[in-house]
Image (cartoon, helix red, strand yellow):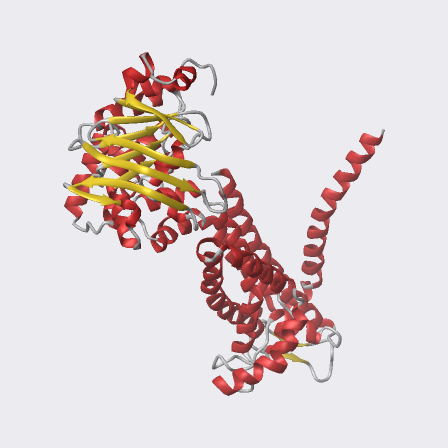
Length: 260
Length: 285
């Protein structure tokens, strides 16, 4: 119990205007300082679950949550589904960072991209900002490429660099958890390799949940794997177990490529 | 055979618009020759507009007053319209509830389709008295013309700005929210910079429209050849002066009016070119 950073309990989720729930009573633990991968065929609900973990679904009205998602941050337990006020959601999203499928640099300079979240969080001190921007860029293995052009537009970087910049931007906020939604699906193999190394490096400081379509990626990278299918969590275990010796027939069929 | 015919026809159509443009410019330029020759660039700074009493063909003409009237009424319109149009666009893209977006959008597009004479009549008979009781003066004048012009260009600006704001990818907005941004911060830091090209384009196109607007302004600006000292004073603008004087003018006065038309043509052309440049610039990115 002590090693959990997050945990969903009988969590169900229904999109606005749809009768059937897209997620059905999911019970998934997220271990601290570990990488948890979520795999499954398209439409299985893995991204939906990920997007519930920082309540980004709330940007669109009338989506329905049921059950609990507990965040164990700073020794406190908090059900994030109880958060109502915008301020609480903002704090949650600073604790639970998110990286998207495509790189999403903001239309501003490299420096401002990384400093953006900190400025939103109220950091004004210039030397503190400088220090944390540099640290975040170093932690995201992109400092060498960017240190001489911090004031140029982030839109001029390559796709792989942009994605690492987005990671740096999230790292700068010192989140408890980082959620990756297929972070390499729009990148070439070399950039993908760089991002994977970076994610493996990051788990020293932060807990990671990654949604991926790429099963090799899940088996290379993660400590735990959750296999989802049609809104159900079919199986969750150590990654080795899931890939070598799964309990469920469905899991085995999926990872051996018999469907999906 | 048919292919060749079609190719020739479409080539003809495409070049026609170019020839019309060049044709209009050269006609304006050649008809304005007498005035250009007589007054040169001093025309732009001269306030006099008087035909000679003995010879209708002669006189002293200067374009300063209509030029100032055109610019001031346009500036007033832009100052009022720009923030309101931005507000409408932001409301429609980010704030409005789904059920509200469609009716408001349709209303705005319909407003943009109302012929300008209707704005002119409404402005003169309904709006001018209101302006008179609020700001004094005669009701008609620079301010009234500017405000009604603003009302005319707002829907136009709002619609283009909204379209451009709608092109901001959801995932970009989501990633700003995921950093803990509020709605206001997302609008200010992501949506506005991202759609900058479209916003500037809409401002410039609206500017071009306001500059050339004739009918509504003719009703509302007062059509008096005087420099306005207050915003409520009556004055005139280039299109209004042209419309009012064309039927009676002869000789040098006529040529001076072509000179004014040439100025308006060049200014509008320059503005639209800048707008096009911005739109193209955005596509390249």
